[in-house]
Length: 258
Picture (cartoon, rainbow, N blue to C red):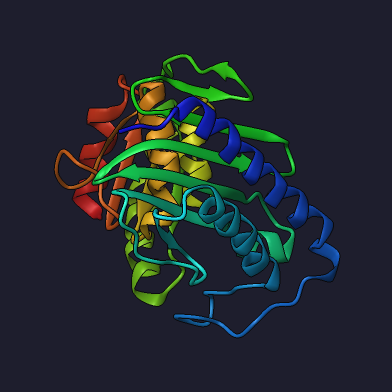
């Protein structure tokens, strides 16, 4: 590996913030396209413009890299490095003005996540991490989340809004809600970075795509959040995260119903 990841992280954070400004500027004039995989899988012209901005800049700097991007600007590469881009995670929130969204960019070398940025445009918050280097919010290092007991815990829930996954999410929520402090539904990336920041004590993500969780997962892990799925490793099918004090209890509950 021959990249200065700190310099790359700073450049990528700038790209994410630039895409966030575009999203704020164009929110009043956005156009919504036809649904993708199902009726609730929406996309806007701003999603597409944001992805084009990010991918064009990345490939100008690293033309041999591969890209996996939600809105179709993917390509194979030859360098061993792969960018995973979700230009607007939480499109339904963005369009309906009912909640937060974020810009997510991760960089893998072979199969390992090496760098991540998640930017929340409205709050002006940029979460970032470099593999082995800790997690940061607007340049300040995040401490390891303290966590709490399950009956006091605030738990984030994220899921794809297709019919099959909504049934699965209903089982998880039905099991968790009576025994937790409360739950919040959030886009997957923010679910993960809010765990990193200690705003959530734990979280669950169901049937995501890699671009939904790649950046947030590295940031959460670098902050000290424990991540897993039905096994020791988290997957796009199931990601459970929690502060260390809560992990065993939350994971046991979620695995029983997910």
